[in-house]
Image (cartoon, rainbow, N blue to C red; front, side, top):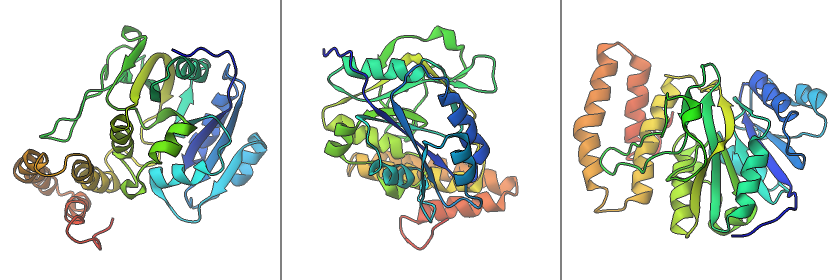
Length: 299
């Protein structure tokens, strides 16, 4: 155990993509944090309308990086790293708002644990009566490539304290900069979804641990920039589900998953979209799966 009373600099990184309203609300929520030593870096992933002017009007100290193209979640966050001066990097979704003590609690925890690599706060749905989204999660199921969020849709007050867990929540992750320099950044090829799980697998293989600090709270407004059931989500959830398993469960460990996906998951989703007449989702499903055989099948 290591104990420190020094207040380190935290670089807060968030991605904006056609969601200026949510980004501005996040910036406003940060003004109420009890943690005082932080900088904010916003990466705009080639939005139709640049948020630069409005962000600077609200808080001139914010660093805004305009990527010029949509780099996705992992690519956008990786772009920000070269601009981060902090000892810790806090990756946070722009469709969230932090409880005033969230960042202080996360940093204090990180300073007390020598083996820590990633810490996520507890996630509560913003538009709910204290219902949880995430308080840690289970390991991935090697047959289905799915896992379960602990505490999902349960009352927030049921969960407190520090928990070692398998995966962080990509919507809020505090990571020491030295860990990123050692292990490397998130894999940009994921673009959207599964990238934080893949990163946690690499970090744990390097000998570090992943935690959920359930005494730190963040409020999540769901997928404000993507949509709950968009074809974009269908494409990347299926493409990256396979990509994650290929990267982390090499042959022959991946064989049970391929049987399950080929004979259960894919047919079920295909028939479901076909019966409901969701042609855009059918196309997204097909292109997501078969992009592993033909790289030209992008979204």
